[in-house]
Image (cartoon, rainbow, N blue to C red):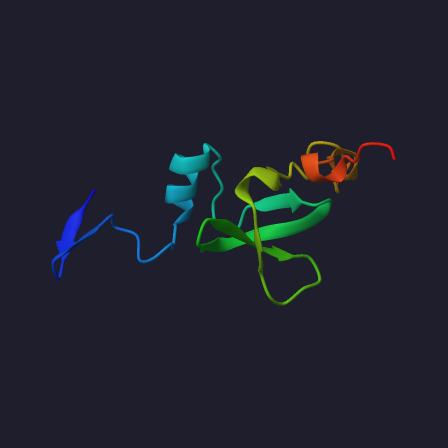
Length: 101
C-alpha cells in the first residue's frame, strides 16, 4: 500500500516503524499485545512493536525492551502444570555457538 505524501512515496510505515501486523507479514511470526512470551530464556509480555522489533516487558521490569522477532517464542504457561516451567528451557541461538579454540 503506497501513497504520495508531499511529493514522496510512502509505504504506509512512518520511518522504520513497523506494527505487529507488519512484523507478522515480514518475518512470518505472529504475536498479539498482551501475549506471554519467552525471549533469551526470560518470561515477558508483548507490549507492542518498535521499528522491526517486538517490545517485550519482561517480568519484574517496568520498561519494555526491543527484541528480535525471530528470537521471541510463545509461552504456553498452562501446558505443564500451573507455571509451565518445564517449557522454559532457554534455546541457544546461532550467536551462542562458538567454535572451540
